[in-house]
Image 1 (tube, helix red, strand yellow):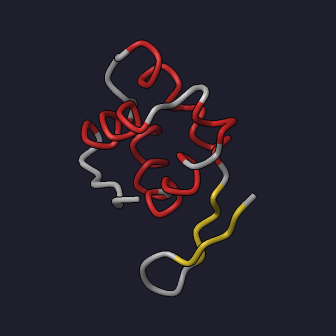
Image 2: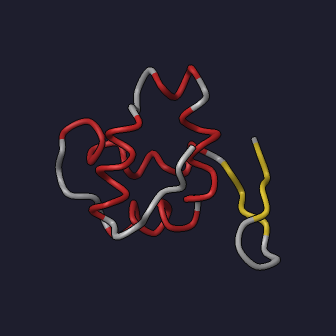
Length: 79
């Protein structure tokens, strides 16, 4: 588990398992749920680390992550 500092002084808990609520949106191209979008917004500073993790990249491509984030109105950082 990674803990990174996000904007402001609050620490962001980078736990990719919290993004399991987005699995349907990633795998079946269904629209993301409000719970998914809340987690994407909360963890957007974590995505570079996630997408560099070979275990996660087996299941989520950078394109899938960008697509779901965009549907949630979130701009992910350039890695």
